[in-house]
Image 1 (cartoon, rainbow, N blue to C red):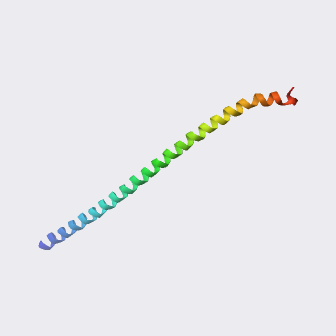
Image 2: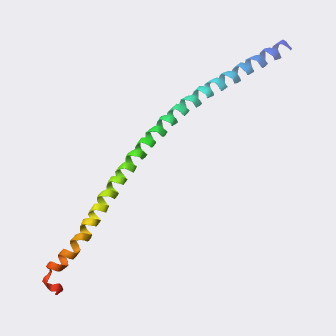
Length: 80
């Protein structure tokens, strides 16, 4: 009976040790994922800013090209 209690105590200690190391592993993994999420959010913000800049440039370019067409038609002698 004493041996069974001793074995039971050792098994419980092993289970507690495994749970402790698993908890440490999960906390480390959580910190890594939080850093990765922060990195992805920064990258997402940068890409959104780049997209907005490119949309603005495209809008300006489209407006300027739209304004040039009437002038080009007026200056082209083959159109008349």
